[in-house]
Image (cartoon, rainbow over all chains, first blue to last red; front, side):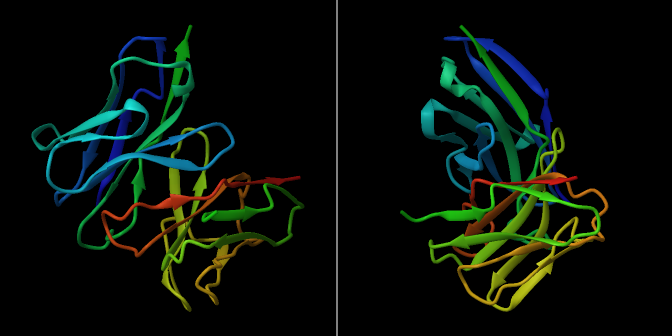
Length: 116
Length: 114
């Protein structure tokens, strides 16, 4: 079985400050990892994903995440927050094999607030 | 434009009624999914389908039913057996149900029991 824990249901930053959203996973096999963003009353949009290869992954809107196997983490960062980054962010995992093959398991979400 | 269309956006259901949420995609994707979203709980998988005329239960299938008669369509019926149906429902699709493939989401449908 696999699971995802997002540390902090709410994160608040000032415009221009560093954004750090934390995600830890549990998986019996090396997982594939995703970050999605959701704006109010809308669907989810993929920010970035890690499957294989380079552990530092760059995504859209200036976000990036680093897969750290030893820490079972996939934290999302952005050097400088913008007001338009205010949204809810979801970390998700899928297993490359086994009963969870092809399906995403989501964390509980982190709401990012950006202050002027 | 290619995408996933969910309808209606808002739906109200009376106690004891069945309702059906529509999901149509023109991305030529093989796999389709239904997720339920509740505040603070993330998304939970209801049903998924990897191919026409085939579907599997997800983590919270009780009280729901689906069909997959066409590649582009995957409607979800919320039955009266679902005790707490008020939620935001998201339909999604991917090229195949393969780990690593990106799953694309529709804009969601709000269901409220009145």
